[in-house]
Image (tube, rainbow, N blue to C red; front, side, top):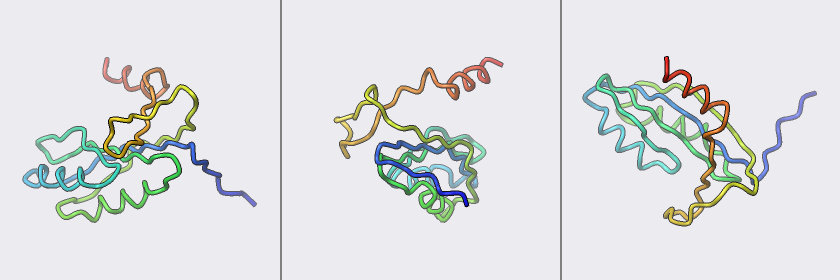
Length: 124
């Protein structure tokens, strides 16, 4: 029998989500999403699509709940999970003390395979 993976209090997780709205609702939906803990809107286009990330701090497990909350937000047609990554923090990771919550983890993913693949896609 398979066992569920064990998560430590040192795991940092992030998910990328594309949110679909009617074009006329895009800004209102973006404002609503920004009020959710761990949610950040990075881009909005004229067609009503929003690029959103959901981040968990170490020890938390709410990404799926937050995506469900995004789907249930007034004005959202649907959302699609397009990226998910979980990393175990190490000594090179730092905590951003200027964050109002005071515990957002800043990890340098610029050398990761994901960042390299994104850069390659942008150059095409």
